[in-house]
Length: 333
Image (cartoon, rainbow, N blue to C red; front, side, top):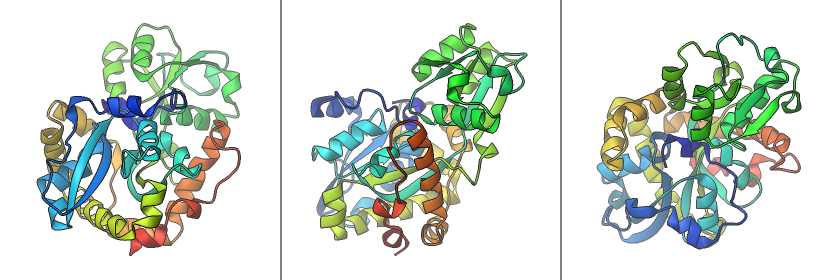
């Protein structure tokens, strides 16, 4: 999927079968052709920068073979489909954007590594609308269950409002672009690089809120997750995959420009400018820093903050302790 997919649209998961999950793989499967290691492993990814860059770097640097793995890579359009494929045994590991992180919190997978922190989300409004308070009673386009939905709720809360104080219009991300550009909605929760496309049509739009307004109290992490029985039953395989992810992560953190180029080559059809825009609106921490933040409670705080949002969204009935689905010590080791 395009950069839209890293927001991990949550709708439709309940009624989709395994065949639908695999259909998301399309013709871009990198099945079995990457690396010459001895132990097979099935991994999912999404065809944007945050969702594919570690896979691209691992391929470029031949990290799979170095760590004794033979990867079967499958491209998906969103995170929930990957979790469904995990449950069906069609994947061992997958990638989730922040909007799908309620799935491991609900026990459907286990987080093995934090990938990035997202800072691309915005609440945008038509020219002349200059505050969140001014959105009361107005039409706000929201891709439900995504980080765009989350940023709208956070920004409304900071203004003393709730989602019930606006006319929420549920729509997919591409429809938000069209609807905002044609003036059918007054505001939207959406992200870069889509906002760049919208601003060409509405150059005087206003940005009312952004991720940075709520950081570090609320962060939007993406992550790699594993199938429950794989994480608990194949610790050596998990260690090998983590070794690849950490090595690729450090390559990305050290040279983001090169990571963009490698990812563009890996994805083939993704415009490099689009990948650069996505990379510029995320933060990629070195593995040592992620390890430290995993053990000092920082990552648990990120996940706890997300869980509060997921409770508001109706995705989680109660608060969930991140230690039940993220083994911080395993990443740090």
